[in-house]
Length: 145
Image (tube, rainbow, N blue to C red; front, side, top):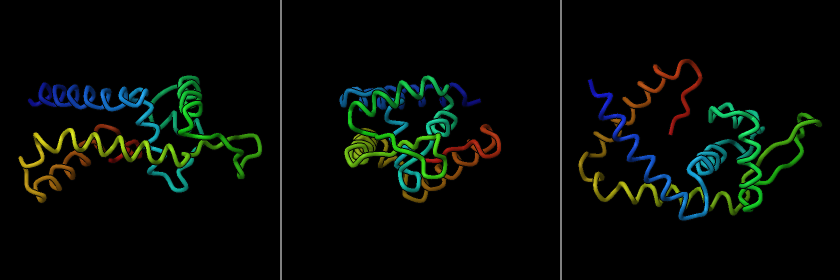
């Protein structure tokens, strides 16, 4: 079985993402939040939806959003659909930070493994990963990316 390989690859990816985040004074989880908001329409979501998508408690998400807001990467605003609620929206600085971090992550991996597969092989690999993720995550849980 290839579980050990998957674990080693995942650990290497996590180490690289931690380094990219640390270079910006952030945690890897902060970047995951920025990436998620970047993919959403209007770059905004309710804090509870972010917490659910990133499998964390709402209390932990509140602390993360406090850090990101203090850094000027997100802002909280009134939810026009729910007067009692708030939306978290990426700022221009947050959009730029997410894009730069993603570029840095890609550059980190492009050198050593980029030439290992053709574009068609990378596309097939991404498709298989998405299918496996859908199976192990259950209906509606796969994030994509």
